[in-house]
Length: 594
Image (cartoon, rainbow, N blue to C red):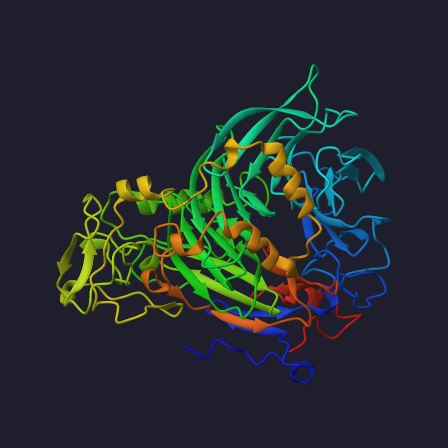
């Protein structure tokens, strides 16, 4: 295989890459498709909120239905997004807004209601408000939490509830989330709450009032800021990551905790779901990406490639590959996935149906590779492949690929036992591995992205006892008494932390240490030791910006990144670069920098 690193030019600019190669081909930066403020001047980002990007397709007749929204400092822009097809025209924003006294921090389009004449865009702000605007009609329709009576802290994440035209969820740096309905008002006095449900380190309250008003629900989750949340592809589950280092996954409608995971250290900053909802990836201040299995509620792999905090993780729905034959090499074609809807609840349906085949009981082998990416404060983009040898280390013989060293988090590693360990999924014993002769294993998968910590076949692997894991999942948390105190007092204390910048995370850790001692979770199913789970190596790891990266979005023809200087970059997928250069020959000889 040729060396992954493509010489992408730009050596004179501190080694910033403008192209890179993977198995499926070369990704190339389209310099003419760069979006930014109209003057193209790098934004002085000190002390400002992260640049974020949202997309929506308005399905207009011209075939140019993609729209892009991004925030830079106090400004918010809304453009037609031409992607790989045509150069960006920054002189003609459809809408531009400059805010005083507060900055936009995040935004989200409602994909259900979007048309060529009207879109519903939610914008969260640093002072806690949420605005509903229509950047096509230029109407500011509503402002929520206007008097900051509901929450005074910064909005960290805002999203429409999947499948709903009116419900949306807002997270704040106070550690609270609120469910709103656009049809309801917020009231002129601070809301009064009534406890609906509480569990291990979370509680949910309803708003107590004579007439229905916002917020409909208030979630208090974990300690410190709630940094991001993400709905599962079917909209039924909600994954939240917090400054206390915990991933918490809830059944959203039932308001129940499904499972948790703890970072190796520090806060978790970002989270995303695989297209089929079977896996969650989280990243954060431990510089790692952590892969968590939804059904087993356990960490199945970690990825190390970043040299600083991981700010965004995202699955590539178009490069997730399902093969029904033995060979596992990825074909690199996008055709299989062209009919997918990238946004909304129906995205990646064909991927989902094909992925479900691998769980069927027939003997025909089904191979699967999930592709995901991450960007970080180290200005690097990493791409990762999650392959079958990591996903299914315990398969029966007929389907086993490569055994990796997956140890029970609570059991010490067995030293150098012969033969590769295989797991019978039906056994409950925490370390009952039946030995498998090495010569009966079929040819192993290409393992370009996994780094076993020792020879994969020289150690016995042990399955997590699902019953013990279920019982002990929360046993290590000394948090069960937290919510029995007055939630209002907690809430006020969290408010006072709202002004602390991310650089002061040490202060947050001091506050949370009394609650959760990391030493008590390390080595448990909540947070396995590094040697207890497979370590992924990135397919590519490239420096692509001068400033920290804050955006990574996978589209059908390209992937989109953005840095804190306010530049939104489009990277054409392999074979897609010609779309721009062939249609744009008059204005420029080429759409790439090589």
